[in-house]
Every structure is written in structure tokens, then in C-alpha cells.
Amino acid sequence: MIQPQTLLNVADNSGAQKLMCIRIKGTGNHQYANIGDIIVAVIKEAVPNMPLERSEVIRVVIVRKCKELKRDNDMIIRYDDNAAVIIDQEGNPKGTRIFGVIAWELRQLNFTKIVR
Amino acid sequence: MRLEKCWFCSSTVYPGHGIQFVRNDAKIFRFCRSKCHKNFKMKRNPRKVKWTKAFRRLHGKDMTQDSTFEFERKRNRPERYNRNVTMETLKAIKKIDKIRVAREARHHTMRMKGKKGMEQKAAARELEQDISLVKAPLALREKSSLTLSKIKVKASQPQAEYPMEE
Image (cartoon, rainbow over all chains, first blue to last red; front, side, top):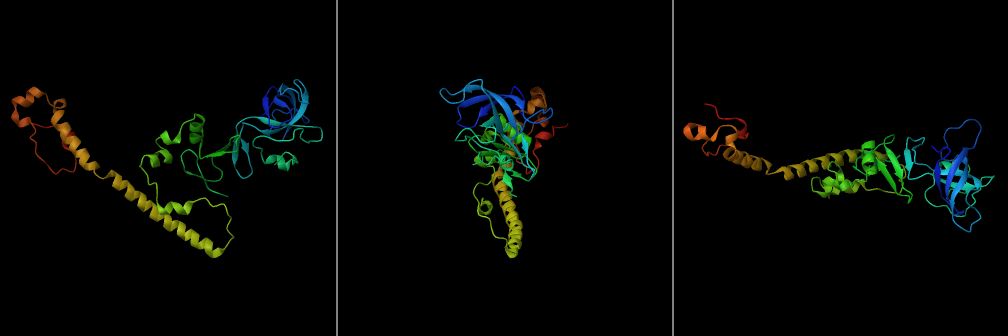
């Protein structure tokens, strides 16, 4: 349940550390973004001397969320934090390594590069 | 489909029940119901929470080591489906359960042995020392028929419940 103003951790090594969601991508008036949704975010905190800087506006895909996730086999899963991976326009991740756990759902949404 | 154990209370989690929490270091905590989940969020240690299996095993209230537990070990290799094996396994599960329950009951009776003796002793002592709660000490001294002599009675119930009647 990510919405504008939500702070997210960054789960890759692209240089950003914390993001703030600005907008959820997609037509219509989306309320919340879930795992696998692409959002537009601004970098709030970044590691120095990396290609990505603070207050850059980028696209990210959500990989973990604290709100429970329901699966088809009736499994309910919760993660420890809200996290996202920075991607470019085509959907390829900008970083080279991913940290932490990634949800299965991303595989079905063709983010195979992120899925380990 | 797999029957998991609740991380907090060690009961089985059936499909469709409970929540799984995945920590960022990829450790999965499974909970059977929100009671366990909430206790976990409060950072309670299951070994200190009295109603969990972890506590009971640690404090010797439940069996810890038994050969029946070997049957429930987690196996990661999937078995090839064999009808005979399945039928035999189902029969075995029932039998093993029966044996395990019988052993647990025996463990419980062993643990509770001597309780009746202790209860009777405590009741006799209470009779001696706290009879003033029932009758005033002065009354007891005047009328000696009211005192209770220290007779050993084979009673099935402790006599402390019934005050002396004139």
C-alpha cells in the first residue's frame, strides 16, 4: 500500500538510499501501489559520488511492502519494510545487485532481471 | 501443500490460516493466528510465554524426546507418489498419533504423581493453623469438643472445606 509521500528503501546498489513516492504509474486515480507496480519517486537520500543524486525523479518498481500480500494459495505474507528497485524506461534495473528478499510476484510481471 | 509449524506456539498451520512474515535476511516466520503474530511483534520470547510449546518443553511440562517425534521431521526431498506407500503412511500416522498421545498422557501422570499427597498435607496443615478463620480461638479453648483432634483420616477430599458444626 504505497501512496504518494511514502518513503521507501532502495533494494539495489544504484546509489540511492531512500525514495519518496510521488505518483503511481498507470491510468486512472490509483490509490495505492502494490508489489510489482511502477511508481515515480524522488530520491531523498543518496550515496555520494554515484550517478544518481538526491532529488532526482526516477521510476521504481516496488519489491517489498509491509502490508500483507495475499497469494492464490491463500498464503498471506508480510515483509519487514517497503522497498523498491530503480528501473529505467524499459524496466531494466539500474543497479547491478539486489539486496534483501524479493517477492515472487515480480517474476510473473516480467521483471525477470530483478528476480534472482 | 505443506503443514507448517507456528513459530511462536508450535501448533500446525493449515493452508488458508495465518500470516507469514519474511524478514529482510530471508528468514520466514510463520504464525498460526494473529495472537501469535501480535506476540511476536511485541518481541516476546516464546520460551517465556507460558502457553507455548516452547515454554512447556523447556520447563519439562511436555515430552521433549521421544521416538514418535522422529516421524515428523522435515524432509526436503519430494517422494515419488506410490499408492501403497501413501496408504501405509496414512495408517502409520494414525497409529503413531495414538502412541504419542498415550505417551504424553503417561508423562503427564508421572509429572502429577504425588500431587494428591501434597494436597492432603497442605490441607491438614491449613486445618491446624488456620482453624481460627472458621471458629474463634477462644471458642475452641472453652469447648474442647469443637477442637479438631489430629486424627489421620483416609479421606478422598480434604476436610478443610467443611467447618465444624455443633
